[in-house]
Image 1 (cartoon, rainbow, N blue to C red):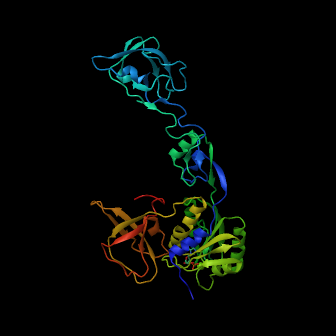
Image 2 (tube, helix red, strand yellow):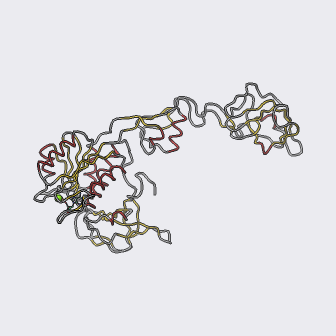
Image 3 (cartoon, rainbow, N blue to C red):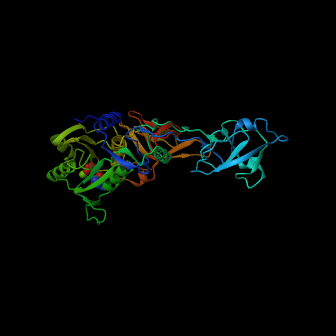
Length: 418
Ligand code: AMP
Ligand code: MG
């Protein structure tokens, strides 16, 4: 007797049986897209000193308090500073220092007036020149304070936070050349079926090319894992057993396709039962009812259906969140759009459907969704051209044109806000 469990429960079981992978160091820029494995405190104030936000003149704001169009204030230029240089003196009353963007604000000065607002009365604008100001400059004007971004010891990013390109720059400012991340899980991929030949071969009568290994290797790569193709295995109990046990010795997660339902030559579920533990073997999911999940020699094992679209949906719903969790991602759910279905979607079964579909924004600004004309689980072109999976919950007799439906956005990263 078969027991079908809801998809949410299956997902919880799979995610609950994977751990985080070991921590490794990555160059900060190479960690883009990955969650940090630890908080990242900065060793210095960011920025380390107050500096100018403009090319101009560093002034004492009190000197310019009375400046106006018909009563300009004239100051003596006593020095100059480029980014990277330091003016050692102090800006006294009646004095100013010519300063470039990023140069430290000299002692005594508390504001910067940009070039365009300063008139040079005599000299070339450097030491010995006299310059005039026609307006006051409030204290702090055009000055970037020390510690504006963060104070020494403060975390600039937290564990679990995903590094963006901006984050890589921030981590570099905080002194990091490398940061700790969870290693890519090694995912072993096996295709099971006597009818299968490698993609480079021309199938003889009764044979087909192995599409699933490419599909699953690509899906694993896209999920941030390190996929390893372990070959095609015929529907032979001994051969499958040998291949699975060998794979378990060198991988963090195993995925097979084919041979996992209840046909005469389907050995996968029994093998997992004998060599390890089966946690479920039927899910309320279409496509992809016959999915086996268990643990073999301590390694999580996912046996997907051989039907390519079913294998793809099974991976998306179960393997992808688990592999992301192994890398430390906390956002595991794809965003879901609500959209009006453009046509009737009749259903007559108790299972949960994830139909291949395309969501689009119409000229009226509303989202509408069209299903692929065939939901046959042998077809992959329909999934290649889909950007979402339209959900029909258990027990519903389907939808009528115009109904609002949930669409899982397989085209958008987890955690996206729609
Ligand atoms: P199974 O899950 O073994 O019952 O296979 C279901 C269907 O998927 C059959 O039509 C198989 O020929 C097909 N199939 C199994 N494995 C693959 C594969 N790696 N690539 C393409 N089709 C496959
Ligand atoms: Mg088969």
